[in-house]
Amino acid sequence: MKPWSKTTFGFRQIGCTLAVVLAAAALAAVFFVAPTERTMGPAQKIVYVHVAMAWLALAGFLLVAGASVVYLVRRDLRYDDWALAAAELGWLCCGLTLVTGSLWARAAWGTWWTWDPRLTAAFILWCIYSGYLVLRSNVEAPHQRARVAAVLAVVGALDVPLVVMATRWFRGIHPASPGMEPLMRVVLLLGVLGFTAFFAMLLTRRRAQIRLERLLACLEQQVEAGPPFGAGLLTPPTSRHGMWHGQETVPQRLVPQRSGRPSSIRDPRGSS
Amino acid sequence: MAAKLWWVIHKDLVSEWRGRQAWPAMLVLGIAVVLVFSFQMDLLPQQKPALVGGLLWLAVFFAGIFALDRSFAAEREAGCWDGLKLYPVSPSVIYLGKVIVNVATLSALECVLVPLFVALADVPLLERPGDLILIAALGNAGIAAVGTLLSALAAGVRRSGNLTVLLVLPLTIPVVLAAAEATRLMVAGDLGPAWWRWVQLLAAFAVVFTTAGTLLFELAVEE
Image (cartoon, rainbow over all chains, first blue to last red):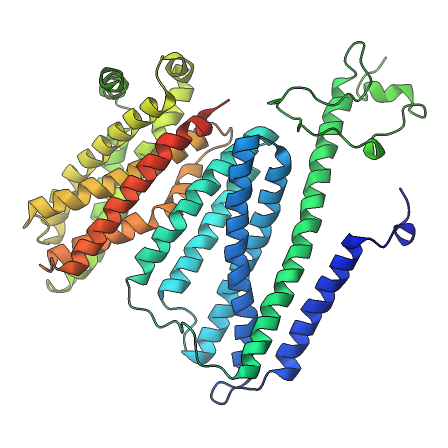
């Protein structure tokens, strides 16, 4: 592996830099550019973060559902990596939506929580996300985990419109589209853009990390099992629905070189 | 097809009748919950109708989910699951059979809990039996449709203790909410468009998730 300083400055680095700059610009705009609201004062600025988080929580949920459907059709664990990354980030954004909303409500309505439709729906969404992550942590075999989680994600996605409908029929006090100064709207838009870019960066980074974790587990499994007779030491898995293996071949750069390998690595627990 | 469906239902009802694994525990749990709720409902008679819908449906949900969770866990424990998979029908039929058995289970639970609520808390739940049966039938179908699918999902997971409740509760909140509201309006004697809207939501939920479950069940139990 090349050290970081020698890696090429490719699209990934440009994208990450852009995302960080955009997010920083959005935060700076919230604090220094956006006008302070007359009645609520600086507490109103929570809205810029809150709206972005709420949008990303919903986007994350759609991504999980989409990736899960593709997984169920193709049975390719790479889509499951996307689903997990989106679920983790969506869960985080959903939690932040609830926290920021609660802080704002304390300042605006004088209460931390009301059973307003949108609050309730966001809370239920957060519970569904949590259930999804708990379910995942209870299954070990990758394909089983991916399948079980994907079914739950599809059911959850079907449930969301009904949750929204049910909660909307209670009378609510959440501001739908409050009157805003033009400059405020610009900052809000910038905030949504900046946080979305940052979300996309975290999503791709986390996705890559999850994929590496999975490949590492796959390699460990293969090393422990020893080489199959008459085959190379680390042959790519062939079974489509194998317990542990993805369809992917482990990339060559991740496979340790065979020549330098001490012979004892074949069976680390063997005494002979 | 109908005959095969009937044999799935028949098998479950007979094994429950002989083994008495889930129903007695479910009923005792439901009765205990109703008892505790009734203690807490020490209110003026005119305040009770506002609470009774939510409490009744929470009691039904928590006791019922206990039985729903058993519907696949018991199959696995007894080694019956492999036999069921060999039964030459599409998995959807097994799913529908299980849903029907679970609807029956929930109905039996309600047959005990509703009179108990009327007796202990003195609320006029049985004034309009037809409307209550409509709400209960749709609510049971919704809870059973989601509960059966997720119970099958959780039964395939090794460390699945209590996972079903965790997964089913957030997903069935629309049903519990709609059934509770519809019951509250019914007790208050307000059968206007608001009541009808909640009943429609219950029906929509039952239809959507019975369909989704029929299609997804094969994926949920695949090995």
